[in-house]
Structure formats: C-alpha cells, structure tokens
Image 1 (cartoon, helix red, strand yellow):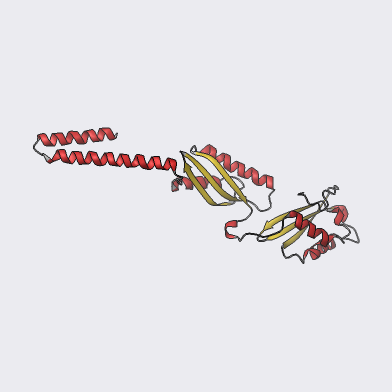
Image 2 (cartoon, helix red, strand yellow):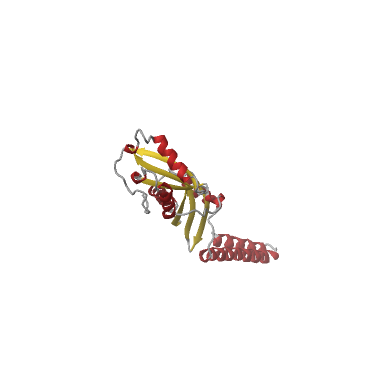
Length: 235
C-alpha cells in the first residue's frame, strides 16, 4: 500500500514537470521522503515495543476487566496490570471473592479466570490471579498471629471448659483487621447443665482478652467425630 502511494506521488511529480511545474519534482521527493521517515519511525516503535515491556491498549484492558468481572464468583477486581513483552501479553490481577468461601473454592475461581482469559484473548500467554477476601488495597497490612499461635492462646484460654476436648474444628477468617473464629462442636456437647447458650457465652467470654479476635461463632453439628480438638494444624 505504501509503495503504491509513493509511486503515485512520483508519477504526479513527473507529470507536473512535463507540464512546466518544475517544483513538482522537488515536492514529490519531499513527500516520498516524509513517507519513508514515517514508515521507519513506525518500525522503530514496533521493534522497541517487542524489547521493552509496554501495557496493552486501554480498550483491550477494559475488555479483559469485563471478562474477569463476568466470571462466576468474582465480586470485584483491582490492581489489574498488563504487560506486552516480546509479542506476548502477561496479566496480573487481584480478584475479590466472598470472604467465607473455602481456599479450594477460591483457587477454583482463580483457575476459571485464568482459563477464560487465555481462551478469549489470543495475545495473552500467562495470567497470575491473586485471591482477596476483601479489598486489601484500601486496608493496612494486618499484623495478626497465624493459626498455630492463635490456637495455642485459645487452648490456654479455653482449657478449663469441660467441653473443650469435644471441639471438632476451628476456622479462622482474617477480615477487617481482626481474626473471626468459627468453632464446631457436636450436638451431644449440649446438655441440661450445659445448654448451647452457656457454651457460646463461655467460649466468647474466655476469648475476650485477645484484642486480635473480632468475633467467635459457635456451630453445633450432628457429626460425632471429634476431629482435631484444637490441633495446631489446619482443620
């Protein structure tokens, strides 16, 4: 296409000279020179973008964002970054999911996002998805103890309670700068002398001194298996 345009310019210049417009040749030469310079500049830019990381066009980024938000389980997203490197596009994104889903479900949602982007956008060759239970970009870093330390302290606080050895499972949710505790007990832990309300009250009261604990929720299940009984490892 560029060759055809430049050839037409040259022909017009020659015709102009034949009709007495002697400056037409110089004008044609200038136009052709500018065209060559423009093409050369485009080639330099394209070659440089192959060697240097550049972001995808804004319109393409919006399409990627829309595809992510349409994926089941994704509540919102932030920190979406794209890079074009050596002709390939890389995507890095944080997605927010429901704060109380399991780790495995969160990873399943991340896998679905990754697979969708790889299938729908041919230039994308790698996707990194970070799972967030809350919009951590607006939250300060949480300096909270991890599971082993939390369980150790709870064991000390709850050690005197008669039903503590019957605890089946403990879930910890790190949200809003606090640790929210879920305790699972069998229904058989409830008795006339130890009703459910009293069990819940004693667990919450014993955990009150810990400023890092936001709430304690107690659930009673029909499962008779005693589980980990405040073990250090994950439930």
